[in-house]
Each structure stands twice: as C-alpha cells, then as structure tokens.
Amino acid sequence: MKIIAAVSYGLSQPFSIQQLDLTGPSDEEVLVKIVAAGICHTDLVAHAGVFPIISPAVLGHEGAGVVEKIGKKVSKVKVGDHVAVSFSSCGECNSCKKNQPAYCYSFASLNFAGTRKDGPILHDSKHNPIAGSFFGQSSFASHAIAHQRNVVSVPKNIPLALIGPLGCGIQTGFGAITRSLACEPDSSILIIGGGTVGLTAVMAAVIQKCKHIILIEPYEARRRLALELGATAVINPHQQDIENEVHKILPAGVNYALDTSGVNIVMEHVFNVLAPKAVYGFVGVPQKIEQKLPGTVMQMVPAGICFKGIIEGDSDPDQSIPELIHYYEKGQLPIDKLIRTYPFEQINEAITANQLGDCIKPVLLISQ
Ligand SMILES: [Zn+2]
Ligand SMILES: [Zn+2]
Image 1 (spheres, rainbow, N blue to C red):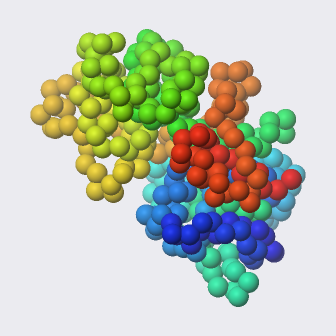
Image 2 (tube, rainbow, N blue to C red):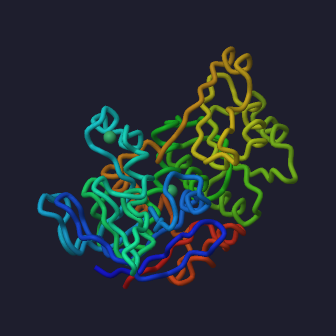
C-alpha cells in the first residue's frame, strides 16, 4: 500500500516527507494508521547514524493510532482499536518469559536492524528498500506495521497525541523511578536532565513519596516546570556547583540518582554526592559511545554503590501503558504539560524546537 513517511537520509539532511510502499501485515502483525507520533532523543541518535539502522530509513518509535488491518493469528487487538505502539520483543527468551521484555535477548535485532526477519517492508517509488521496522514500527509515517506483541489497546477517550509518548519516553521516566530504582517513601533522588524522561521521573518520584526530589537542568523553563510538578529543589549546572548545592540540602548525599543526560562531567559530580548504599541509574545515551562509568572502584566498594543500566524503565508495555493512563486520569501524571503538537510536515521544525530547549516532547500529528 502507498503511505506517506518522513525519510531520514542522515544528519546532514533534513527529514524528507515522501510517498513509500509498505508491505501488508503478516500473520501476527497489525497495520496501524498512525495518528500521532512522539519524537524521542533516540530517533535523533539514529538519524545521526549512531545505531545499526542505515539510512535511508523511516524512524519514529512512539506511535499511536487506529488498527486498520490485522494478520490471521492476531487475537490481542481488533480493527478500529486505538493502540499505543511500543518497543518490540521476542516473547520467548529468558527476559521475555520473566516479563522483562526491555531486556529481550533479541532487542537489538528486533528494534534497530531496520528490517523484518523476512526482509524489508518499505520501498521507495523505484522499489529501492528503505530501512524500517524501527522499534518494531517506524511510526514517522501515515501507517506502520507492528507485531501484536508491541501494540497495546488504549481507551478511546484519551487523545492519541498523549498516548504516543507513553510507548517510550514517559514509560522510561516513570518506570526508572517506580521499577528500576524502586525509590522508597522518604528517600532522596537526584535527577539529571529535565527532558521528557527526567520530568516524568520527577512526577513518578512524587507518586513514590520521595522526600527530596532534586533536578539538574540548564534551561530555566524546565526547572520552573519541574518545581511545578513537585521537584523540591533545582540546580542550574551552568551557574551552580552541583556538589555544593546537593550537600547543602543533604549533607550525607542522595539515596538514588538517575542520569538522563549522558553528560560526562555532570555524571562525575553526581557520583560524588551519592550516600552509602545509593543506586545510580543510567538511561541516557552518553555523549561519547566509549563513555566509562563515573567514579572509582575504591570509592564505589566501601560505600556499597550500585550502578544500574535502565532500558524503557524496566517496563512491560502491556502492564505499564494502562498504569500510566491510570495515573494520568487521576491527575498525578500531567504529561500534557510536556507535550507540544506539530503538523507532520513540520517534523524538522519540531526537532529544532526540541534541541533549542523550547519544547520538551514534540508530538507529530500525522493522520486524522
Ligand atoms: Zn525476548
Ligand atoms: Zn525513545
């Protein structure tokens, strides 16, 4: 079928909106008309060529839309359902069997390879293959093919523009605090970076009843929003000394830290303000691929520090997406404050606004 998609040709060129051919769903797949898709930092990392997916490629991995067609063996959703499209997982490996699909043994091949097992499903008008199946979707497009495992039905009363980002950025921030770090009531958490993941982490820390919620963020508007969302203190890393500021509030250090920034120097400062037995989580793609962990073994061992790598906030989308909607409906997860919508044609403008710090979570409005 003919679809409209934003094609990435690598960092040197803007995304280009074109007509492509999309192969129909196989037995366990679903064709989703994409109504809205969030733009996540990982799309931009892939656009820059850091991931295995090779351009030209259709990216996008926070899709939300309406099921248009289902394969013969699909039982999880039906035509007309509203769905969130999340990351892909195999369902058969040890991690998947333990409900930890974010650590699926086939995560890289299912999410970043740019093709389906039996070959590419996207082609241009000259029948050249275009890399797709990004995070099992490639949702910067009017239509996407997903496996039934990575679609989740959602209530029709919630706007699909709010649903898209649940599939990656928001479940990552929420799950990092509630599941990966499992912050306890009255504990202290230091969050690095006030983008979608960091600000959702602030909201989740409020839900977990953390006593001290400190955010490090250079943009003033994001620091202000963090305070509105329940942060107890904010630090501007360009103007304030991170270690001094944290020690003024918590002389013994913080119990938990979450890095969403990947900024090397800030990661080092945060290591120096960890309390004994602290858990330090990392979700950010580091500035440099060869980035080493902060601190030294001689500092880490005596204090019993634990480092934790976090993918998708240890979420199983079947469970986490309804949970996120539940908190949104109760008013405890006001994710609408993070989102700004853009017409699909303005994908490049939306990315620029995000990079300049003007917009926290850009969401593209694609089909009606
Ligand atoms: Zn698996
Ligand atoms: Zn993402």
